[in-house]
Length: 68
Image (cartoon, rainbow, N blue to C red; front, side, top):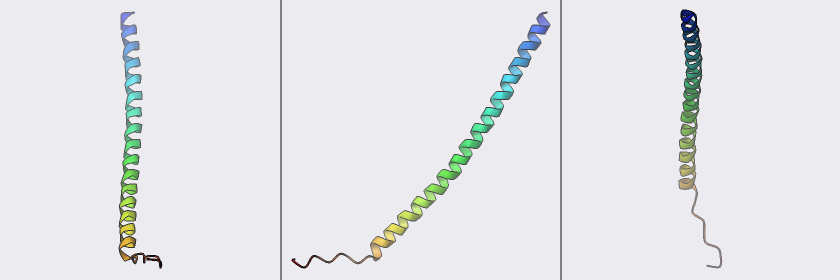
């Protein structure tokens, strides 16, 4: 009887461990996907920032209104 209870506990722990491994792998994949997306968005923001700086430098300064 005791051996049966121990086997049941071991099987329950193994099932729990397998579930935890699966969840951990899913979370790891999700974090990796998020970092890939964050890197892409960071590059896009930097590109847009440089584009805006370029537009600001090439734009002619505003002329004062005629009443000055």
